[in-house]
Image 1 (cartoon, rainbow, N blue to C red):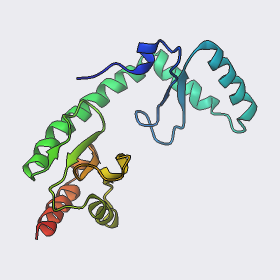
Image 2 (spheres, rainbow, N blue to C red; image 1 turned 180 degrees about the horizontal axis):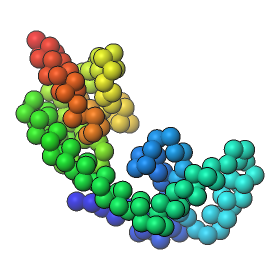
Image 3 (tube, one colour; image 1 turned 60 degrees about the horizontal axis):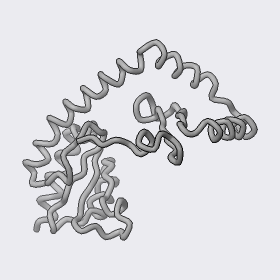
Amino acid sequence: VRGVGLAPLDQLRNVICVRTFAKTLSASLRCGYIAARPDLIASLAELKMLTTVNSSGHIERLIHGLISEGHYRRHLKRLAQRVQQATETVVPRLQKMGLKLFAEPTGGYYVYLELPEYVDDIALAREGARQGIFIAPGTVFSPERQPAKAGIRVNIAWASDPHFFDFMLAELRHRRT
């Protein structure tokens, strides 16, 4: 179930919404937006003009065109379909390995998995990095650095790579012994 964000609930009186286009368009497009009270936006716009040495004006105009001409909305729809297809393919395979979902995926780029008790999330992430596979250990998402159960976060698109599945199967077998 998707929730409502704080910004719409607060109507931007006390909440500032900061977003980026990096995850939906390209990581190299360092451009985003801020939604806040008009007086705060005016101050932030002035600060940006005073402190920006290298303007992102070309990128801002490009993104404005994509949004205003409807290309961005169509792109998001196609992207959501690809993420959904990847989720429908990847999640059952991960569950078949004995990994449990921390929560049902809701259309995001990541899936959070609980690891069996015999697997150390940090050690698994280090070995993955050694083999060119990025796995975020669940420990880094816990304020105490000690979650109740070991887990990992994986990018749903990269998790469909056969190399990832081979790695996970081998590591789960190896660490079980």
